[in-house]
Length: 441
Image (cartoon, rainbow, N blue to C red; front, side, top):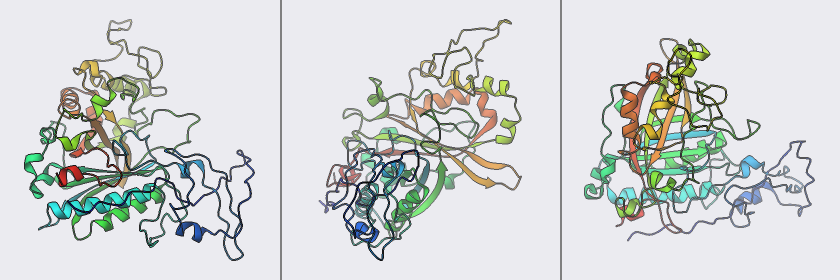
């Protein structure tokens, strides 16, 4: 058995930081003078203020020392914290974050199971510290990129690709559900931007916090694995709308209306692997399908609003089905208009993707949008970093995508350019690293 990482301190960093919004109009209580930002960073995690899983609006302002700048209190957004250790890995049911990085690594030649275990141990330790708002290293040495920021809902998620098991001599422990995805007629896949031995997802509500974590993980991998591909995405920032609502994609559509909810009685069995469903080391884990879907925005934006809504089968403004009601109203799939035509066309995206139209197949969508500039033809290279989570991709993603492949009206305006499937094991317990039950079993 290899050494285990030390238990992670569940308190947040002692750094606090300020809410300067006039609307909050809070009076900060007094705090002992002479506590500097540098001193706080040096004791991060040891004397921190516990904010819980999602944090809160902390209203403490520290009196500066004679030669120090004032330290302000974290805003509510900066103070939010996700917990690394738990039954499931973070970044699956975590609310959508404003910034995301997806990347895959391949193990270097000659590196196998032992080196992979050491890397996952380093990665888990780094992720645990950063998600707690602590410096990346216990000795305080840090790049300083996120020096004055809080956790900002940072999450780090790790997974294994199909090729990982051959590289580490663990072929007999590869799950059947990790079989390569079938080819689809709409695929225009670049193999250089898909698959990979190891998969990492970084998400945060602050771009610098996310980048800081990304760089730390890349440095941890030196000498063991190299980056195969990286993709960067974004979502709307928390608090940008008057009230929480389903996210919009770059086509302007609400994206994720039909997601299963954690309150659903069958949520866990749809999204997470049960103890009886697969290898023991995958218990409480999930399978994620990643697809880089380019949106042909010039073509899409050339359609009128009514045409766009027929392609989707929903109102663009509210997400309500064309047959009426609100976003979560069940559509009347048999309803017809005055001419006898179906109100929601047979090839409408919303009709085809409904679980009751796919034998109950369901998956938890948790995507990021992306924009990688303008290509040589002068059109935007932009779209969706599609991520869907399910207990078994052969019962989740595959049947839905096969049906979309046969006649989805939206297919004319999108192009699948990269793909990957990864086994994401359950969360690490205190003192463990992600994947330990696989690598040391």
